[in-house]
Length: 287
Image (tube, rainbow, N blue to C red):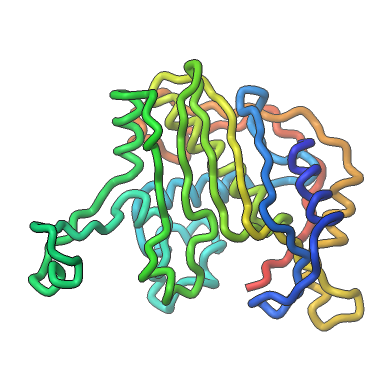
């Protein structure tokens, strides 16, 4: 997919090398942006194989609203490194998508005073709100979902990377814009792209809209890099991405979703057809 290859080249050509939290250096670029037309095909990368079943399992876990990985880890281990010994995850995206905590103030008193009187907390289902609002008022500019809760982010082992997304309806098509504070170009971004493209198609189908664009802004877009003789050489992504750029993109696949109510959709209701990627490229996660 040309848009992804252009993103890789941008970071490689304009990025700056710097140390990272993981102990592995990155080449980082500020404020990367790309967008893809979802009507042109499902944006699952073809210049390497992407594990779409894992993408889908992760998305359905988000949509479940769970804040533990006990069910998810039966299918994929992608969140194991950040959960505690009980399988609890401090920053579980779906917990905020489906149950964002909102202190209900009974007066205009300062929040601190309100909380002292045991202010009740209302859980907001942001996904349900977006779907209902699109059906009620498709011209709304308030179709926002946030996974960023400041108090949680301060203490979390891994605060949300893709922290907010916004939908827009234009000319009968559903568009989605994702904001991401930190994006691992080799491993994370292909997953994020496929995840949010799937979610957009699910909501478009639920609301009777056609597919529009997916747009993506990444504040710190980075590639992990390590010299060949470095103890961290196994975490290098640079050489694998160079190989990927040499491959010719193939036609995009198509995603078909069963005609069922949004919250009744299950893993077996999603079908990818025509996916013929190049072989996988191994990238190791820097935790």
